[in-house]
Length: 290
Image (cartoon, rainbow, N blue to C red; front, side):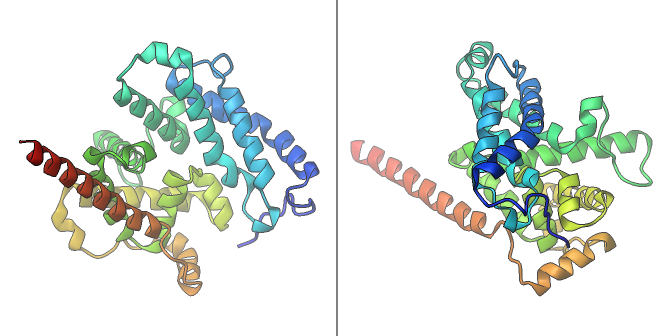
């Protein structure tokens, strides 16, 4: 797999490279801000999302090293999206529009924004492709299940929810399901749902056809949906790797690339322990008062 060499002639972290990166990607960063603004029902300029996107772009441009061989957009996408989303949260017009205590609506809008990034066809009023040989009402149901599973993944990995006792069990269970999958499948989920990378960008980075990523992603979500809804299916064999991804999978095995979710799994256990200790401490304190 060839490395991206677009900016390889520039000195890392130099003013020339930073200026070039900002100049080349300012329009792209603005498009991310507009996407987030639409999902949050905000004006991307009046509510300052353009400034948030620019700050995210500048932050990444100052730290990007062409020697990594990673395309700049893949490197910067998640940071710019997060900066725009943070600006949306802080917007006064957003606060007036939703009022206090509307965390559920806030989470829903954030999930919607990320779904629009993953499934570009939603912007055109189309459902995601259900897969080959599926037509009619079954195709519609399969597409909706795919969207629901994606939304569940986004929700489970949401940073703001992982410190909440109500959601930590959900986070741990989804993480366990994911870490039982093949490493290449974990990397697909990691890049799309954790890093915010598009399927097209990931396919380019891996040097394979985008359709291979799309079909593998569909199979992964179908497998997760089945296992999440029926605990007994978790003992079955791992999801098979399609031919289009076998070269990448073999390369990962050869280079002994570990699960990208390994650290999160440790984190989930730590969170659960801390929450458990907190609950026990509270109960003990209440018992003393009684």
